[in-house]
Image 1 (cartoon, rainbow, N blue to C red):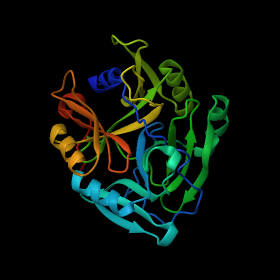
Image 2 (image 1 turned 180 degrees about the vertical axis):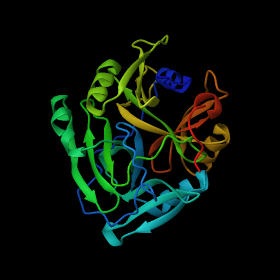
Image 3 (image 1 turned 45 degrees about the vertical axis):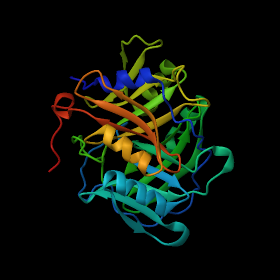
Length: 310
């Protein structure tokens, strides 16, 4: 089995940047409105550990929409009304991410934050294993008609992550287009323990990648593909940095996108070259402080066995 392990994961482990803004407990277990399925047509796929969705929690909903529409060309549709409103970002009619209202909290240090969701057959069944590792369930499983069931956890180091069982199966392993999520990375204080924990929890094969950094970083793989990376929080991390999952979006030009982030009121935390694949990477924060990444790279060289989306 050939694993697609890119230099992206090695590089990200070295720069040591992590979402410094606190996230608190951003979710409330409320009944969400009826949402469209994750896939317009059922895929029949079950890919445990594949990151299949992302939600942004923010107080300024209109501001968040303007920011990401201007930066990535996302369009938005709103489902439900009042306190039950849920907003979905699209690119070329493909759903990319959700947007949910969360009241800003003075102690968190940020007004907004992203949560990534990995595929799991039974989101609620993970609670005991998370608790045994020092974490806890923040949002108990919520079943949303047509969408599926999701839950949110905090791991033993404090990093938030979600799990989702899609009612229409998991999305296939297509090559990411511009404006879509292309990589997910966990920044950790104990990368080996984190790799063991998530491998056991979500069924990954953990690959130890040799680098000059100590300790080594890891790639979490399943189904013949790299699903995520784990890297150490380095000494050059921002003050107050703590373990966190960070999603990265594919863009055509990282420098141009990073410049636009600043024009839109956000900030650039890191901007560097990748070692190979003609790549460049940035970690940025939006105007409300939600941290995410930007990557440009030659996907033909990295994911040569992934299909084009039809």
